[in-house]
Length: 112
Image (tube, rainbow, N blue to C red; front, side, top):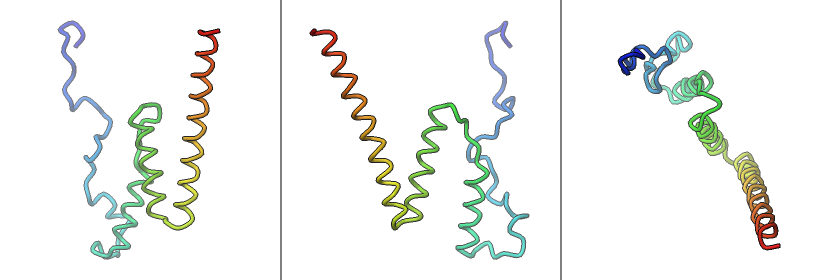
């Protein structure tokens, strides 16, 4: 309510809260499979990652995407992990070069 300055109850939010999903939400997808099998658990985790929805234009959304990228690179290992490391290094190098150019431009502009 705007007039009183109070906000709606937390159950007014229609968005699902993280962690609110039931651990057995993929039972229909995993019919006939042993829930104690490690491969089935990995498949259920994969389904969870695929169906996870994050806000795309928030800090939390961006950080979640970076987390997913790092976890998937670690899961794959080998040359995929090396490639992900090279990509991250190149991105950081580009950020450093851009920051250095900005600092040099500012100093040359201010000091003549």
